[in-house]
Length: 417
Image 1: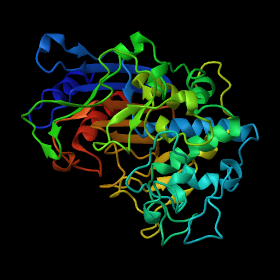
Image 2: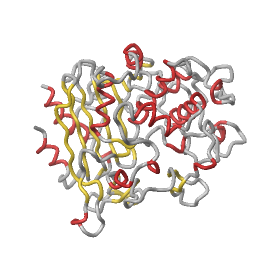
Image 3: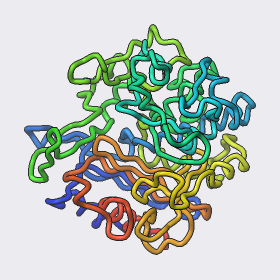
Image 4: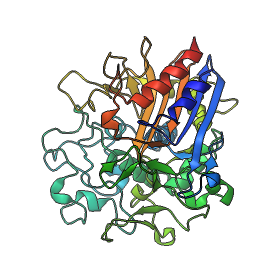
């Protein structure tokens, strides 16, 4: 079992991590789950640290995008959304890249990062601001057109942008006439046996108490591997917040503040729910997503096999010129699915693995996460709850990913042989 090697990661004085949660699926069955370290680190008294367990949930970052794609594909199957439709048909305003006014941005483009949209300085804004504030010259967050690629129109050139999923979340609300967080709970998470969600104000006190705080050993821009762990997000002290939390652009420090859901109109701006990264889930819950693609979610009629197959098929593949491959980390996209081609030195998460991996990675606020599955019934899931050094100084030995990810995945991969 990989227990000892994984436990050692938490004790590395140069590359420490505060917490780790993993799961392994072999031949369509969960064969291993592990939880290590602490979900909360008391700043003064180690005796008050709180350990991670299998039910601890983390803000899993961009794996959220894959889960949102599952919700969208449910509406596609029902005929409520057309992948090749102009997103303007759903949003209620015309969304065009000003440099390419005749080229529609299609729903499909949002899922595979070929929309020509860009993040700018921010991609999440609170209500009562609306999605249009990003995209119209009079909008508060237009930023001189920073949310558009002036050189590449929608359809062929891929560039990873979190804002794509913020637009998808709002589009979902327009199509289903329901708030994003509620739709995701009812239509995706609960049917898959996942009890977390995108809105922590809907959590029970017990769920908040078992929510992991994310950490870095960084103050401002300065990393100090010998210094203290600094909380980044989800440090609620066991208290359920009164509403979703998002950065307040009107505050001088851009601090997190509560969004008033009482005045929110679904379909105007779902970005404050963080569709791109705000799902709270455990490794065992993420394993249910992998099992779904394997056809192994017991008795749940969730998506047709042909729909799941369509999600894993290539929508974009890097040819050396047709996009930004994220320093070699992302060379192919499906519909909301990250396709790992196993190119040595680049998108090769497990050394020696010959078959394609599918799934998604996450990286935010110190957390690193991965949900990788193949089509033969195997999956590797990891959630690393913080980084103890600058990740630029701990790069992988055989891939474009970090040393932490390579070490965790190598240990887990041994359980598949």
